[in-house]
Length: 262
View 1 (cartoon, rainbow, N blue to C red):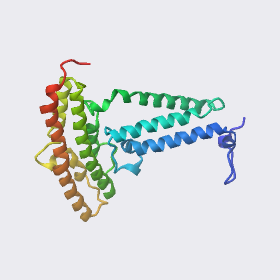
View 2 (cartoon, helix red, strand yellow):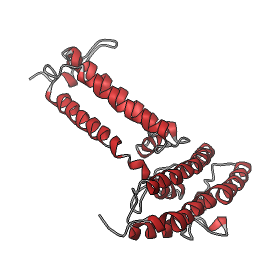
View 3 (cartoon, one colour):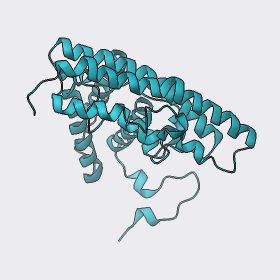
View 4 (spheres, helix red, strand yellow):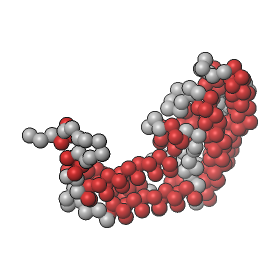
């Protein structure tokens, strides 16, 4: 039995397995790779979750009109490109992968007419909850080097912008009677105004926890700089952002929330 993947090959030569691939399979492999790399650029938080550190300083503004148009175009172009590949000569595994990708792209495209961005987050899932997990240092965001700490500060800058857009989106939902149930909004208010986030002492914020665990490999001067920067970011950006979200949900959104559930 020939086992191409175990055969020795000279440097610069194709393996047998590579040689017998069809042209369509090679096109498909390139499409998979291009899709994956572009997806990480579009969703840098996903890259961080996958352990890819290239985009740890970036944060997608996923509820903005520009981002949504770019996201939709990305799926459409990938689906169109997939449609140009003849899957008949493709072997079983990549053929199945192509079918899965097609299903995923069509499913993702189906969401856009519903305009889910009018509810930017809810009590189970959403960026404010994910951001708190990441910023505590207990999730996938790394805090091992000074660069890691600086990367997070850049994400904080982007997060404050996201919060402002989120309030605008919630207001669109109010205007169009596309709102969450009241019982859920009440839970969200409590989450946003939780004392581990909105606190008078920034050193007691969960966002300060990475500073409590500054690695010994970081110099004393850098530790002092980062400590001051994190305290300032928590006081000036994060606490006000969460407080504004919580007060908006409590004072403006909750009165318009629906009594029905489901």
